[in-house]
Image 1 (cartoon, rainbow, N blue to C red):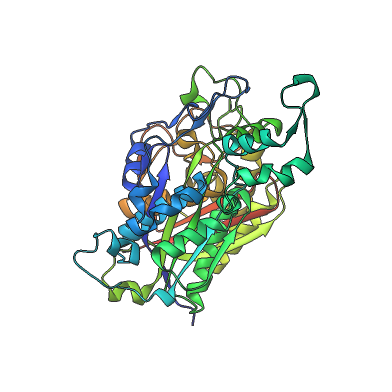
Image 2 (image 1 turned 90 degrees about the vertical axis):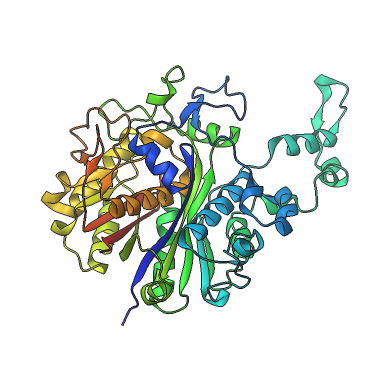
Length: 444
């Protein structure tokens, strides 16, 4: 018999708040985290806005004994480490990190078995520190004092240039380093994995953690994802792919318009989230608060205008949860704000639910926080879990007039009181390939 799995902790780091409560309240109050980019000068880019996280110090989320490792943490890693700390603390887990920080109410030993504590974390393509890299590259130039004759030399780079980078430089930019740091900080010794499938990464990570606990390989898992696209490379990639809203540099708060008739593109962002999944009896034994039960998981591949991948993933997740389309009372979709991607996602969702697809309330967050890739799904799942727990659904910002071609019922205007019994969340990678869906049940 498969073991039941519940959500006992939520940790998110977003442009509208640090922590699930702050983020959820901001969404309820219809506050926007998208503004003109401050991290670097975006003047030469066609899109100059993004979802940027303000005051943030990774030292606030790790023990002092681990502080020196900050120098080998890229921004994506810092986001994951912060989300993990917030999720662990929210779940009431006394891990090594919590104990060393003196936040375990006097406890000196963990209240969980580290060998039964795992992690599955989604990651993106981490951008190198461009200032650090450029400084080293300038030392590998022939004829540096003659502007017209300057050329980059691979021989000089190998002989001198690389020596100007720290020997541990590469460790800042490997996708698996998010899970590496998180598991070391919290001493999680059960199965761990990294998934790099764009916007579908977090859902796939949660799904894998769900299966890991179901089959008895772990009792608790941290799962989700994190990514920062808020850098010159992230901005230029999305710009070259034609995905960005370029007509809202003077009004950034209205730039991302999920499923709206007048949507013009997405907005880059940074952030992430981790959920604590736990075997039901293990959670009950330690008196944990339960947000919702994870009831089903489905995945597929392939994208097309009819949203075939989303349809298959949702259908598989519902079948896994033994839930029919008519039982779904709340949904969450990516809604990045591009014309084609929103239309395909909505089409696949409607196809999966049949007649119910047009009437089920849909929760969407991207209008307020933008698209941060691998971490976006975890933020959505955390917000969905808290919406089910609280019985209130935040509205989608900037979705003023739902595109009839999408044909879905996006929650907009004011927050909606709704005690949904069954909810489904879907995500699809914009680059094509992976799609995934998670089904949750309300916990009474």
